[in-house]
Length: 146
Image (cartoon, rainbow, N blue to C red; front, side):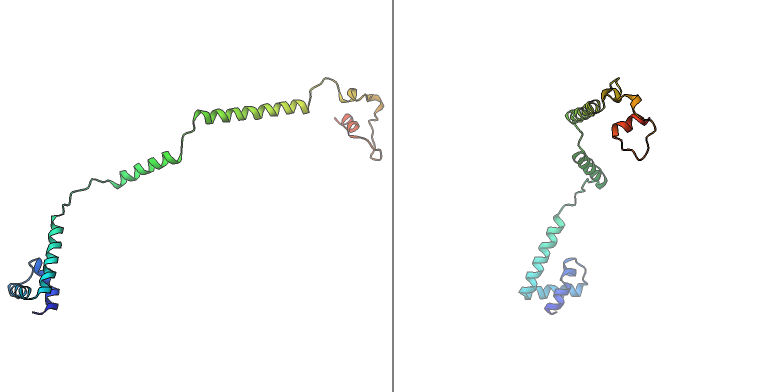
């Protein structure tokens, strides 16, 4: 038996899958060839290491792990607003409404006097039939229009 044949059959020899005649030829070659004997020893050591490893069952449920990860990411992504957050929003909305009402009352005062009385335009002096040819100011037009 030559080294190439031994290299091809060494794994089957370690697993005891060879017929009796080939086993005897392999043993004879391994006793006489140092290189093949060294390779046999190395493969036998690897096999022994792999057989000694324990296959303890791992209790891992990927679906539960996924749900846990989604829940933790959801908590990290969507934070609950604090009371200070809502308080500042309500305060800002109140300030905007107050500014709106103050500016409305200042721009549009509610006086009982008419505009004609404030500017001293007698209503009788304004002509109700204004033609297009006459020039009038805005105040005169606002008094005439309903």
